[in-house]
Length: 194
Image 1: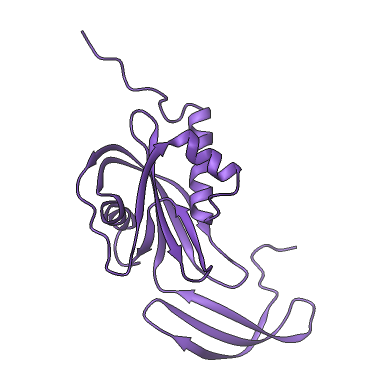
Image 2: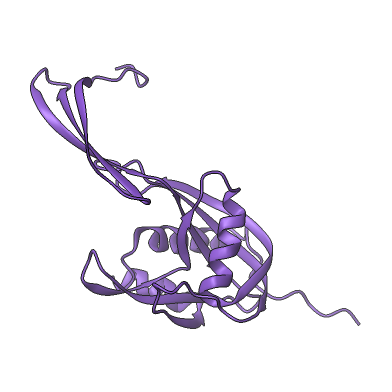
């Protein structure tokens, strides 16, 4: 099988819905098996950005909010949308400040992912933020957030127990757990010089 060959044939397409964040298009297609059908695709106009802040004592910050599409409360890493015309790290810096009031000196991209690639083209970029300084949060007016500082190990347990289910949060926490295990991230605060 040729990985670069597209086995789908598009016969026609119709825009179904469009707003400033997403567009929905329905396609008439011939599927890989040769049958006719339809396919709906949600196009995201922003890049999904997620940030896992981690201090010298291996504490992190989670943001709690009620998620309208799920009709349930969700604990997540700080995250939001980034304009594709803006460098993703600048969007990550903005989101971290808005939601937690944190500013970081060190930024490491840790993962890129597609969030629901059977129906959407939404792309996410995840960052690890280190060398943190606390300032005042600047939440958007549509957000009613609860910010919680906790040991990273507790956030990891929340993933293991299925309390954290947001895909970017799960991916970032598992990736950082691996990075800590492989000593890619220093475990302890540097010893003070005498």
